[in-house]
Image (cartoon, rainbow, N blue to C red; front, side, top):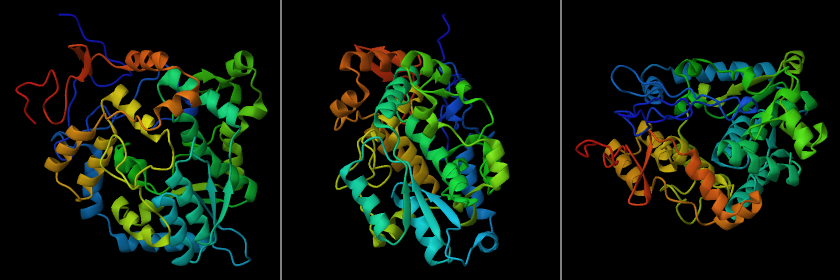
Length: 412
């Protein structure tokens, strides 16, 4: 029997967590400016009982962490950086979503800090996304908006889609890099993000640390050796006639600058128990508004609603890894005891993989890609160990609901 091809270095056998709905195909976060076409993904870990690392982290949050002591650590940290001369003392990156509104409000109003918020904007704001951004500023915070060159951003988005099936990459790169760069420029060494990625499946040892690994946002590598959109920068200079000036917003700060300025990136979720639903309930009192309709590909109305390309980001993860937006949302809500696993399985079965048609034509135009090429690239990116064409339609071989085309006995 011919061995089935496995792309992206994913596990050959598909396994689903016994507590939530995530599969072992979920990739860990990568250093995006090192992301190449041939990158092999490290993936979420499972223990001997078939439980994913994200569920184990959630269990640890409930049973082992003393949150009063963690908040005391936060107070001590903030006392170390708090200024009384009227200048900023903490950087809070965000776009006006629930997490950034919560973080900036709590740091300012409960802990007496003087936050400077920093925004790397979405590719194309949604109406509700921009309104939430305006409402965020109206709560009484200062903001630096770093908008990159629109022509360059569109080109990098197209290249990221063509080479990596990852149209969200230019946003992710900017989102991770802009806060440290602003911190250096404004001489504000403390940066506060929301939750640690380990809460969603990155290596669980990372959740033991309050500080983000510097390799995610700094490097002393020659910028010409970085990759953007799956293309090495020196080729972007040569083939696409871009310059260092064009690409500077996408480059990380140097490691030397981080050390010199004593920049530290902390996770507020290390110190305060992070629950996305509770954040949402909190920030509705401070200007945040959900969508009036559910988001395509899932059942929720308030997660990642500010960018018109968001839906394609999650849909492309469904194509590459068999994991769509509903899976991510349901897994997180199961861990936070908002829904049961049975409910999560039903939600994934109903919504995962739904095509984001609302902004489809607009995104094709933005990336300057026609529909025929779009589908060619999408189908080329499917890993044969995950997908099978049956009666002219692509189907997942394995599903958490047990109704994948290769699932035995259609058992959950």
